[in-house]
Image (cartoon, rainbow, N blue to C red; front, side, top):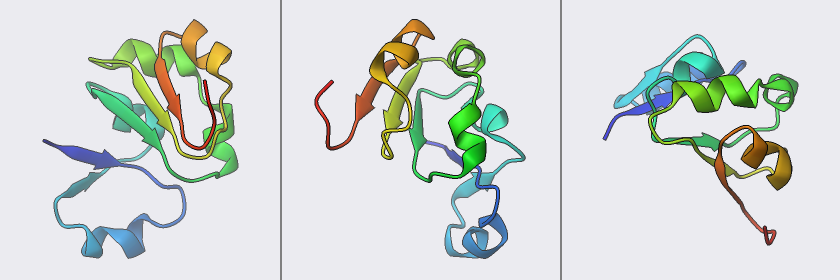
Length: 89
């Protein structure tokens, strides 16, 4: 499996610690061709993503939202199957 990551602040520090991870320039590049998108941090840039654009670029539009940023209805409407950690639905 290939892991691709984007973080607006921490990639330079994180990259040497994760040699098997491909770092990319933005969230859209990270999602392109992916089976699963995992939202790990709460940076403001991740709160304003175009979910429809992300889902359309993915092989399997699955979103795992570890920060519960996106409401289930919004993600589902954009085409995602979504899992939110710590909350039902």
